[in-house]
Length: 193
Ligand code: GRF
Image (cartoon, rainbow, N blue to C red; front, side):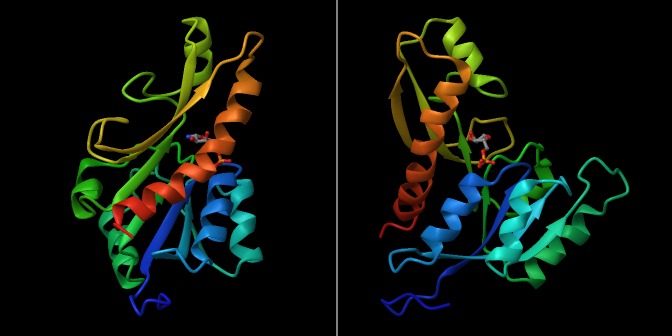
């Protein structure tokens, strides 16, 4: 696919595990004139991930992989991505940890969105922990993926105020809305458009 500016769009795979609301928002973004990416592949570690439905809706190739299967040949998967000319990977609610070897093969080309203001609250249950610590703010972060969990270079963050009667669900909802906006801004920033 070619951008209106004549530049080729970056062939991107989105990795998911669940609902895929970030995936949906990225797909919509990828169809806009300002997008430097085109989404060519959806990868899931979970065959039941709701987000896989977007493959059918938007006619995007999908691949389900059991990342826990020790027999899975990672090199075969890497070859599959290369054969499909995948140049960039966006993790969006993807609940597996990628191997060092995999990350090395796509060095500087894997982005992740995390629902906290990193470096605070790496890992799981970010909203519960932020509320438990009586934080005034939380938010979301888009960062490059390196071999340490949620520790790669930060691209963009968005702060969200925690209200008085905030619950983990209300906070998750508020932050998710911002995640959708932040991911596309971060992609634009990465490509300096
Ligand atoms: C998002 O909050 C993401 O940051 C986190 O898991 C959630 C996934 O949501 N890692 P969705 O699947 O994109 O709707």
